[in-house]
Image (cartoon, rainbow, N blue to C red; front, side, top):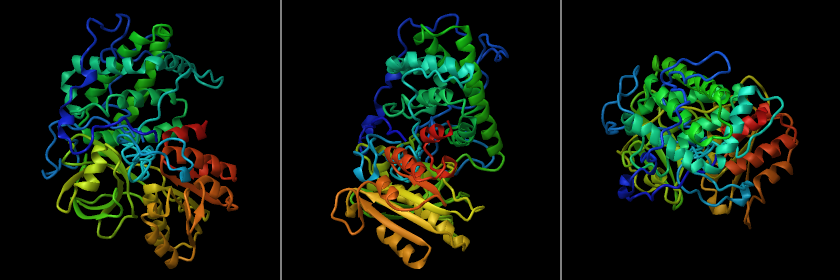
Length: 532
């Protein structure tokens, strides 16, 4: 997942009171009159201008690394959780991100800097999702959304609406900052009550919501990929306290911002395409949230029961949720700390479901990262965190006998370890090959655990790969190490780590004969690219 926007350094609460740059509306600059209010008119069935339909939240905030609105005036994590069947009355990414990510690790084959994903990461996998989809332990995503195309793509197979939307995206790309500021200005001035859904400090948030919306719109021709993703977003946005009545306001601000800045491509036909697309996006999310509300709480409270510092900047944090928390090995969640209210980050689960119900996360402190630094350097047993619902599709397919070829970079090893435990618990002897990448041997913080699992399970092979030797394992980049081994055509691929590693890893796995439908990760950008 792409790395998140920079955040104020953790431990400096004054940053949270910084003024919201996007909240000041441009003087006397209302959207042109021809824009049709998404909140007042039903979408037109034909190509003409139409209105944005009702929706229930702020789509895209969790995209694999985008952080969505967080509950305003939310209760303290120690307070009683909301009723399991209703979203919180207050409001508060998603593959996965947090602030500036560390430089990319050459061993991972990543050209982009690693985000703390989930998991505060682009793929919620530990280092990729960490505060960033890919949800990874440190990433997910809340999984940052990939940036929209900088130029229109005239795909001959694209739908008419997709062509119009991509032309708009190409036009506004050079003025993306202005579009973002105007979008939030319209949203907060016309609907000031929605300001409380977002974090106090918008430094890291301001471009994520709009970028997520634009990305989802750009890829609406890939429904197989986006539908499941949008459903996860809809379920996840319940923790922010979003309601169906919020979606029209967001759609109205979106259309207003596009109308003002896409002056060369905007017309009634283009507006109709955007309205229909936003209608689809929002309705998928609304329906998913309504269905989820019938059987799950909006969030879980979780007490820290163990905090183990593995390195100077990596901690294993174990929590006990206040009620049963169902999830699958390989998934991730969004997490909020008591020190940074309404700021959520994605982290992958570092184990398969346990009989005692405890949940473990591997967290890497990102430079200037609010949430990751709080979890690594401040959290202690007794502190209470909040968890969003589980998400992610990087789970084991137990309907096949194929082996598992797993690539884990940095804290992206966390969900990979969970997959190994899942296979072990099933008692089915499927070959599992794990390539564990890092810059130096000392960065392989969980290698002892992985080697212990290898000694217990003869079907498991663990190969450490470092980019800067000497090393007891392999030396080089993770994708190259995989290419030099094999054959892998009878294996399913699993990837978790920084966005660059996911990209190069997908290319490597496809290059050794694994089709894209058998490659699993939680980076939206790569999933869409593979599907098309």
